Image 1 (cartoon, rainbow, N blue to C red):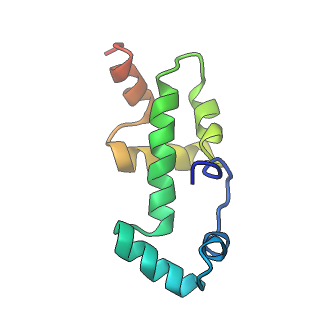
Image 2: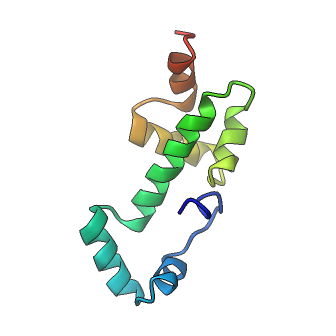
Length: 99
């Protein structure tokens, strides 16, 4: 995950192949072990990385979006809010003392 989260696409097939499992077997195992689907896990990981990058106010939010593997700003904003309850702008402002 650490090596590939920045890629816009990360297929279940690729991850299942690395684990030497069929896609259905991998999905069952992954869900049992993490209580998340792979998609939710990847999105949550990407949002965590975005939170870290947003603390650098030299980076535009668009740069953070693409650096974390999201391929469009609207989806990034929606996903970020889903996991944090805030927009990326609100998160940055709150953490950097701007409000």
